[in-house]
Length: 598
Image (cartoon, one colour):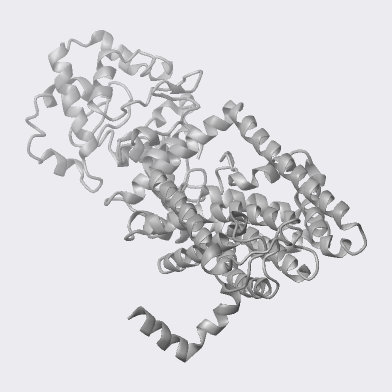
């Protein structure tokens, strides 16, 4: 049946006549393992094309949707994690195979006549593969891709004369955003594949025309072996081994990595390129400032031009001398690249600040993935850039540190010279109970002598421990009063007027604190307590600490600044309030944040 199908297909297309000259071409020196790299490389290219096409069905190229669509591919699409893993590890495999194939061709001196054009096509394919790597790196629009892209484009912009224009064209303007994503996406899935197909087709056609170039000394050895089946069998074994290693890496890693969504404000992100570009990253450190373009453009460009000139130099320089020079140069460059790569990793290993930044970035990554995976959260409709901004644990904690912990403390962190109450468990029953027990403690008003009313009350109070517990229980219910409820509605709620702590609260706390229609106050000025600890109470306290129902009575002694919308957005205020109320998705051990400015 298979022969019948093959015969039918050959009768209609003539594919056997096209393949026969290539398959039956004698191999100089016989089939050898050194010839497998080109075939394996072509096979991995096909895997890259297939996996890329599969991801295109779900990827959305914009700065607001890119991360979310990649998250969908990685975590929700059937076999998406495996497909993306193939693409990720396939890209790294291509780089290794490309180097091995290049060395094999160089050692065989396959740049000599009549293979000059094929040598140049190989160099062009190498440049296209590097471009594929750079453009694909940015497409998830996560922290790693964003900052790596920014570094690369800044290097482009540092080139003399044309650099700024090239950067603007690639980025799509002065800012990194939708235009950047769409341009890189267009290059990655549109322009570069066409160039790759044209160059690869021409490369294979010329290889068919001229045959494989064996190393010196093997060409004269007669052999009856042909590409099919002798060399094809070796190539199949090598391809199977390489793909097997790729699959093992995918299964071991559980797919491809995905960092937190891109955040242009996080300037402390430890941006590093993939391992195969580490040598270039490290080399740039030896050309600081205005000389950076020397390490990023001049030196790599000179090496590339030298390689391109080998077929021409072979006509004017002794072939043996030139071949020795070319091989020595490549060995020297490989050694130098290896040394710079090792130096880069060792340098990071010895930097505590790098490890701290990496731990923070990993925690943010785990937090972002947890939020996006949770059914009650997910990627916000506004886009992945809002994922962390709408997380009270991340954003609320960060804003709290930046705006509040210059005076307050929380969980042992914050102001070195505390001048305001500790915010740990603020609004909770535990915080209230501690306040009633010892208001003069540093955790409460010990550092704010202007608010000594509670201290004076404690000296004259006769409430026992049971009564203090009941008052604390009663006050803790205030945080649950809805924003739209008034005092009368609240008093009519079941369990309010007859609460065990209500009488003691009205008698003891009502002497100073006023709740219109419930307590009179007046013995001493004090903040209003209606809905104390609720989101609306805390929000007003932050916006208007000098209001009459807050601490306006202190006049010039009132030290807490009023945070208007210009200095604290409504979203950030909401995040602080929710963070203080523990209203957020609990963190996993790996995603517990550290205090950090937003």
